[in-house]
Image 1 (cartoon, rainbow, N blue to C red):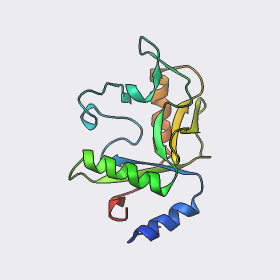
Image 2 (image 1 turned 90 degrees about the vertical axis):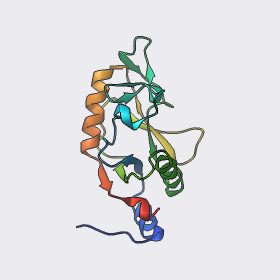
Image 3 (image 1 turned 135 degrees about the horizontal axis):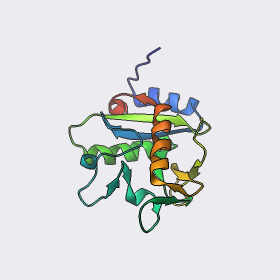
Image 4 (image 1 turned 30 degrees about the horizontal axis):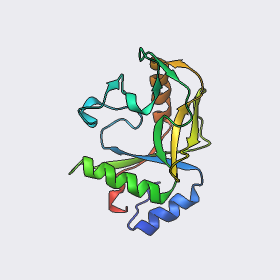
Length: 158
């Protein structure tokens, strides 16, 4: 069943129904958990779709090391989602953004975990809990993306 949201209140009410929902706005036709070089700033480094500044990497950048405050960013509140969405919209003028979401208690691959950002309420990191090769993280992020749902063109309601 497809449901259309016409107002902020419509979307907000649905978000409240899904306690533990974590979301991230993503440019249409982009991967929800991996980056393309053209989707980020020129000074940002991408390795196999992983943005280097998001993760705690070994010096040789082959291993991802556990860190409870580094990982892929997700919003857990409507307020945080709205702020992130506006920021993404600013850096992607004229592009359609979709919101990908997953439930916090979803089937997350072993070695990954959602951790609340200690410095920003409503923000979470999808972190690694054990040292793993970068290639293994990419596999897990692809697996995660397959289980995410999407709200297409949600900007009209935000």
